[in-house]
Length: 120
Length: 172
Image (tube, rainbow over all chains, first blue to last red):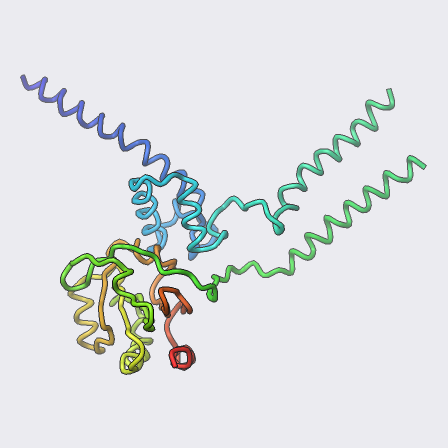
């Protein structure tokens, strides 16, 4: 009887952690992608400042309200500007940032092609 | 001919890259929050300070009046410094000062107000800091000037003599 009770308790514990795990992971993922605006060089997830702690609670709240990752990013971008996101968007200020590596890759490929393949 | 084009392209690419990064060096990398963009006030449920009743923010702010929402806490030292300016504003007729008590203990907040005076028409509470984030705030103290359900001015940090003059000019 005692072991049965124990098993029932164990069952409930594991069940609830399983349910929580999904929102927990997603909120961790989101807060890792957010810059803590009042700390230097830390994400919201890593920081323990008042601002970051509140933001962590807010992200969980919004997830419970049924917002998805993208909607939360947009919500915070609207409040605090794009700077709060670690991944810069593709726009007129950042196109070089995004395209330069690709251009370098293509250019390097062209050099290799010219030197080694065309010569043969 | 073919051999000459290649070094020229190489040179051109390196100069562009160099120029872009060199220009980037001179840009300021200090983050300055956007202060002058008018934004609609958020619609959130907020608890009242004394009674714990819940009120929606769109019921607090009427469209034809000026409001100053001030985020404060008894543990915040700059809040003490700006308090005299809030007291001065509370005497103005055409503005209502609304307090948002940030991560504070009720007892401490009350003794803070007893000591320095209560400039607020209404006090709301923000125990976990999430209401402040809905408003786009960074911390305490911070003040928002509101008119027509829009944030027309944001003061990050304590109010000063200058910001007081500026607010008085705006509400005239």
